Structures are given as C-alpha cells and as structure tokens.
Amino acid sequence: MNIHIKNGRVIDPKNQLDAQRDVYIVDRRIAAVGSAPQGFVADQVIDATGLCVMPGLIDIAARLREPGFEYKATLESEMNAAAAGGVTSLACPPDTDPPLDEPGLVEMLKHRARNLNLARVFPIGALTYGLKGLELTEMIELSEAGCKAFSQADAPLTDTRVLLRAMQYAATMGYSVWLRPQDSFLAKNGVAHDGIVATRCGLAGIPVSAETIALATMLTLAKDTGVALHICRISSAAGVELIRAAKQQGIKVSCDVAMNHLHLSEMDIGFFDANCHLVPPLRSLRDRDALRAALHDGTIDAICSDHTPVDEDAKLSPFSDAEAGATGLELLLPLTLKWAAQAGVPLLDALARVTLQPAQLLGIAMGHLSVGAHADVCIFDIDASWRVQPSALKSQGKNTPFNGYEMQGKVRYTLLAGEVVYQAQ
Image (cartoon, rainbow, N blue to C red; front, side, top):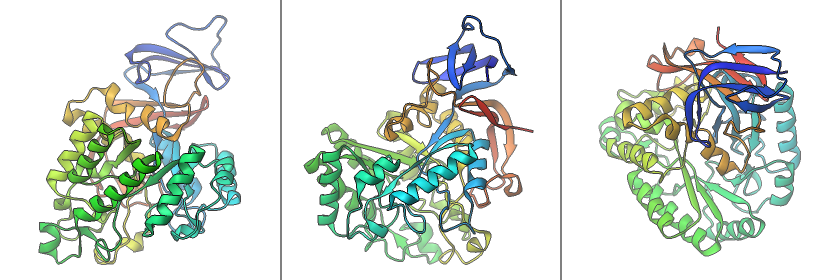
C-alpha cells in the first residue's frame, strides 16, 4: 500500500530533521521525505496537519508476560498497548516462565508476535540456563533464533567466575551482555530505597551500595574482557558517576534509565502506594536529578518504559508484599516529552533516546525515517493533553504510579511496515 503522510512536522534524529515535510511510503518502506517520488499514487492519505511525525518508538525493556504469566498479561494485550503508545519495536527480557534459554521458546515468541503484526519483538536471551547463574546457555543457537543480547533480567548472578566466563564468551562471539547491577545480598528482602521514607514507613531498604558494588564488578570484568556491556535501569547518582568514568576510560559500556525514575523519587511512595513499588526502587530526589542530567549529557544512552504488567490483586497487598512493577508502554512518549520540556532538551535530542539510540543498542536498522528504511512511524499530537486512567489503558496491567496524572502528547497513528496498526478514536 502507498501512503502519503502530509503536512506533518517530521522529527527524525538520525537525519537531524525537524521541519514540515510530507512522507511517502511505498512497499512498506520510506520512499521519500519532502517531494513525492516519480509516479507516486497514494492508496491512503493521512493528514498530519498540526501533528508530529517521527520514527516508531523503540522500547528496550518491555515484559510481554508470555510464556508463563498470561494471568498478568498476554502477548496480544501488551502489543496492543505498544501500538497505542507509538512503540513499533521492543526488546523483552528473558524472565518468562520458562525463561528464554532455548531456541524453540525464542522462535515461538517471535512467531506469535509476527502473527499479531502490531510491533516488532526482539527477545533478549537468558545468559544462564533457567537464569540460575550456574551454566551458560548456548548463545550461538539463541542468537540464530533471534536474540539480540543476553541477560539475567533481575535474577542474581552471584558467581563472578560464571560472569567472567559469560563475558569472555560473549566478547569472542561479538554479543552484548545486558545486566542490571544489584548485589543480591545487600538488597535481600529490601523493597524501597534505603532513605528517609523507608525509615519513616518501616520498610526494608535497598542501599545505593547494592547498585554500585555490583556495577563496579561488572565494569571491571567488562574492561578485562572487552565485552560490550549494557547496564539496565541505572537508578543512582553514584552509579551514574561510575558509568561516566568507565566511558571516559574507553570501556565499552552503555546504559538506560526507566522513565519512572526520571520523574519520581522515594517521596512518591507517600503512604505506602504499592504502584511505586518498583525494581530498582525509586531513590532520592538527588538521585532522580542526577539521572535527568546524565540523560541530558549523554552518559545515559536511552530511556525505557520498564513495562512490567502485574495483575490487580498483586498490588492490593501491603507495600512490602505487593508485587513490584508497573505498566508503561503507553506512557513512554508523553513522559519523554515531559522530561524534554522540563530539562529544556530539543525534541530531536529527546526523541533520539527512544528511537535511534535504542535501535543502535539492539543492533537493528530502525529508529529513523531515511529513504529505504522500514516504514515504522508514530504520528502524535504534541499539544494534546490527557489524563491517565487505568480503564483506558490497552495493557492488561493497569497499575502505574502515574494514575490520575495529566499527560501532554497523544499518539494519533502508529504505522508498522507501512500499515496502520493503531488509530486514536
């Protein structure tokens, strides 16, 4: 199908384009930006007057809950949520049940995603069998099945010899290793940042040192092995400083931050709001401000939603017993826009954190609107305001710390491979 998107403000970080242009799609790819290609005849015209046209968002941490946790969410519900949020590509961590440690599981997930045709799914393979931290998986086979990197998700890997061997092998094969830094002993039984709110509420705390000690180990081994290391969901100012120093030393390290941690802090827990029970925990205001600054200066490479849908009953327990996690796919764009507006970051730079840079981390040729690129497009109204209401979310997981918040920026159309997969009512 030939599609003509006319009169929109095209924002394309890779090509440093922020101007009113028309976009032309032919055979599922971008055929031209600006003037129509010779002989072009549109089968469909989308009038984007007053709207922004950008590459589809790429989310590098979105749990789809299949296989194994269908009572929390289904692949169909979460991919509908992705389409509604303008997310056309997403990476899913390996902590399914069973974990993504066998090629057959990865192929099944990709096959199911292709049949739904709502977003591209890029699995992250398990680094060790069962995520138990004991035996390395067959990374070559998992890579051939479609895994873009290897991770332990939130499962601890306490044996540093196993971690060293994993990094050595990944470095040899050219694979990247994605790890979330947390010392499992220091964090044991913790549910909140070890600060004034946890003390006041009598909640077991997770100190910043749980992040920095684990991070220092990971960075040291990455330096020794030369592996491409990606740090998932950094949460503290001290952690940011370690990554900044590592980058200056030439260590091949990148990192991301969850959107929740850019806007919230331990203060938002208030009177035991279980929606704010997250992993990693919301930290101090100083940590939040350091994350925002590090994202601005490029120390942090990308923003992710850390989409973790949970069933409603799991959030009704007391804070300490409630299941950690929050839905986020539909909030990634407005929360990125909010950070950009508050930090004075140009839209080109801000949107690169959820398009081009995540694509580079995954090693996929997406996240831009160059001629010949896949026609994965998000069209949104930057001026539209809307209130977050659980009943209106497409995700099966309705829990988010932003329930009731006013958001700025609303997705109007999402196109995947030149096909409209979402249109706002």
